[in-house]
Length: 463
Image (cartoon, rainbow, N blue to C red; front, top):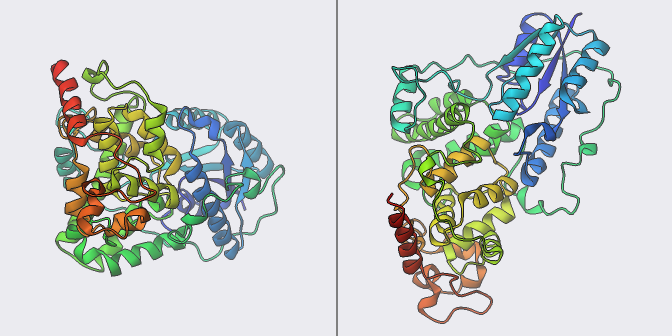
């Protein structure tokens, strides 16, 4: 039987996998491969937490393939040369993959596609990650959108869910290909086991993703519009890492929600998926935004001189601001942070400390299991006030008021900042109103004064 290479990347699943389905539909024998080439991803090579997740997700995919009679063949790059060698070795007639949208990878993939087609191979890329391609939604003038609401309105006018496909029930068996390596040999798993705290909360892989959707439906969906901003409750889907690694298709999530509940909560969650779509739309059309301000008027903004001491205190959750410290410690211990808290800690870094948003973006990139270039860039620039559809720079999150509103009893704070758990709720939010407990630290800045300093800096530059 003629063969096709199925090049897995951030599409680590068998259901709803368009590249795999394309091979099966054409009667080609799929040869599942994974090529490790992080150096080809430009300035945004995957971070340590992402690598830890990928290690487990690749093992899960390999186990699923083996249950069907196949296996995942693993290689190290360079990618084009590896694909060319594997085509010759397997006598493949085609190479199929699912698209990624990071600028460096888009450019790399275009070169690969051109080279393989020139060699006479059938070469196809497919959409496995998004409800809408980044170039599909545009203004009446054919321009990209810069504001979410009109983008999403237009997207909903084009709403057509892709057809779902179940995983195959059997795949042809494979002998190990020449120069294949093992997943463990890629060195993705931390040698010192600092990720041990991650895995009580996460199960990477396709089955873990589907279990997470069922848990979301059972535990949080019916009150999602009320609880999604509450870090002290189980109120969010926690699907972001599964989506990033392509362990589940967004359209399968939508269909699973459709069978469970209709109404406000479903629509609010789907709108959150819309923000993910908007992030990829912006990254495609404005590929400089991971490294530069979307709004060039901020290029000469007087960010504070980098203080390694202050940055390190923020990174480690030792700022003396309880909700900020809780979020940063949650991130360090679990590889994830509640979205409301992400906004609070980002505002504190960029407004109260007035450090450039890039310092925060880079830290999140290395420590988040759901580190996604599109979402990370959009989120940090949104809070910093430098991006598309951004919160204006003069909007400064007050971390005490935010904690009082969204963690009213201080339960989230007490969980991640145990130095404060014996305090009354009001004092958990601002322990400096009394005697600061032993082991905790005084606030590194005065919130009111640092807010005013940020606004004064903005005013001096005539924003």
